[in-house]
Image (cartoon, rainbow, N blue to C red; front, side):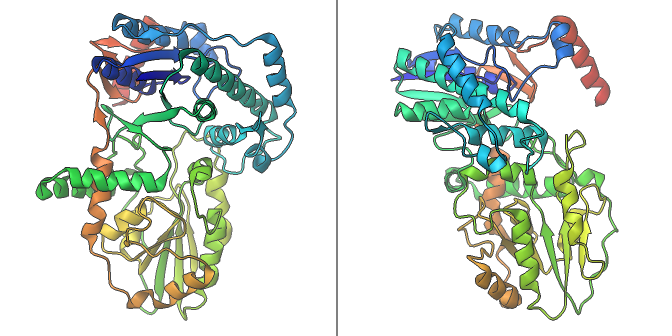
Length: 481
């Protein structure tokens, strides 16, 4: 059985993960081919700043390091695939013809293949804007579309040349990786996707789309059943909830735990005569960038879901709604998605807690009669902390009976009217999810990663930086600790 690795992302640990899987398969005496097709693209999800390039940084430096390792292990690395000038002109013409909003971009097809959805997903994440202004970023949109079509054509040529049984590539939603998946699908070739695991030194292989919630849900069950010692897996799972509450970052969340910046004692005391609903918003751009892989969305946007929630709350005589806006990283390119929630604040019984507020989210959760989210993992945490939970979007815990899942507005009103009568779910039912988040993935055997941008092969650093820049980077890291 022949495996073909097609990669466009040079960043750590993704390229190392690809090489890790290739080496593991080679040790199993499988036929393995590897190809880097991320060269000479007008736009990429992962790029190097101009200043670093001037100082000697290079994608090809990293790629050459990886390919040298693979070749020494008798893995064939394909030479760069060339697309003829006529086809390139057609690609450029197709990309420049795009003229529309974000929704049109999501449906923009190349040779009847929807490459636009991957470009939209990438640019939403890149600019951190769920409602990306495609006119403002038109030049970037055109370059990203061009890159996506080039990758698609290169992938088709590679697959035709090598005739693999299985294609392996990185996470399948991006402008630079979705074309590989779509090319393989067109050729009716089986696809495996790789992504980060639960910590720096793990990776996961997905047989289906990375954001396929039902598939991930099955994986969660499988991981839980695989570990037979109940005490061990319970201890590991409970550590997840305690770490989240205490602000200790996990490996897979890229250190995005905001609890350490939040302070105790800032919660408005709860009035016993009022029903307190706490709505934790999900990250808008993260939802929008993966929405195309979700199914059965009742309310297509989080804002629409919240409006329906507020409308349904009128059935209660006395209620107060707290909207906790998802905290965000300080390096974001845009805060539009965080600021739009303030309009819901009525200075009466609806209070919006901004993204940068130091109010402790877990103390707020403790005061809730009902926790509501838009598919966020805070729902799992709320179950563990003995709270009733409702999700207004399908989630990784959908169908597990741990959260109310309204099917329509009428059902939503019914849940709001009656939820106080329902029993609190056994918190132990949240444990399998926490155990998965703490353990999923396979350990690296050939590479060692100390961080998401620091990996080694036999003590040799896998870096796109030259020696001087690499030393400067290490010094900066030490000083920041």
